Length: 427
Image (tube, rainbow, N blue to C red; front, side, top):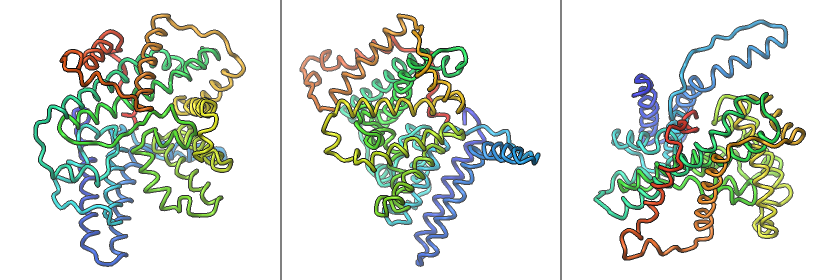
């Protein structure tokens, strides 16, 4: 509302539609009636999303296509701002409608409790996309002061701030000027920017998610984990079990499985994978770059299924090689995600392989990024292999809270405190 007051009506509208649809599903005795309420909820909510996020993109592409056929038709376009968080809260509300229809969750009759679920402030604008089965029951529980919850939440938030301010925004200082001025750079700069961007977007989005999870934890609420060390993945399939978990599981449960999942013929299974990831690409934005990015991830997973690379025994053999291959293909796919246009993405990719030259970067910036990556890598190694650190159990107060003191110091010394907004605010 601080940004654009009238757009709060969209949040209220989506909340009201899904609330009434759930009541209607509960009221109807016949399957057909329940289905009508669900379809109504889906159509109305997705229509709102389409109008504000995709209509102009569709109109522009249809006009271009007709022009190629010699027809000059200019479809009307609307000057609409993309409301902050619209993709997140609409998907969260639709998940509730579908779960009520399936009988997986109880109908929430208190409108204000349900509205709190849709608009819970820590994760409203950029996730994690919560499920009603996890968050709604927590609003019914009594919450009291908990020193342990507060300290756990503060640690999560500080690590989130570190990922955003020290890692992501520091990488952005190098990445953004190159991706936004492609004709003026060479393959060496493209390569370095393409290696930094995966850490920029990870630090940015995982940092937001951890801040949201930590803020909720301070108040005694438990949100779902959204990232699980994605760059330790040894296959692209494994990557999507670790990256943006709340969205990937949403598409798995509400798109992939309803289409048949892997319980169908091999070709149909590949089709289901491709559709799911193309839709995932479209969810991220109205641009062909996102669609290609989603299609690339879908094709890579189909290849893994075809060759049996997604099986556990394959991942155990030659783990370092598999990790390296996965990281490389994920980095190449990220080029399409970050590039402003498809032609920019191809120019960057071509430059990496044909015009490699020494990139220029200030030593101070490089050392700051290297230090941040070293700290992140050490922390992720500790978490990935469950290495127990007993410092938190020390009887000395200052030693017990060295983590907090250290994070604050690093953020002050190396953080880009006037950096960009969160990347996923645009989705």
